[in-house]
Image (cartoon, rainbow, N blue to C red; front, side, top):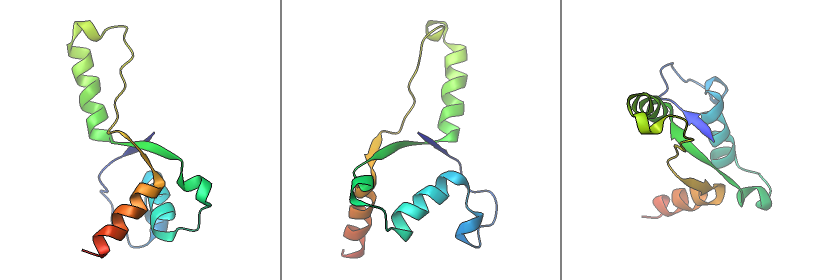
Length: 90
């Protein structure tokens, strides 16, 4: 799981990306990962959604003592490449 936040600083080069965005950039844009790696994946979520979920959990008594999974959903790296490729050929 990686937490993604809006980029609030100027990004002039990939080296100035935050860790989560740099991971995405290196895999999707730079490429070169082994095919087996591309069959793996993660779940991304916006850090603002995590903050909202924490706030709601504090407000809901029923959430006390529970484990709550917050995710935008899983993906595999290959899906990003397929999506970008399909967008280039529209």
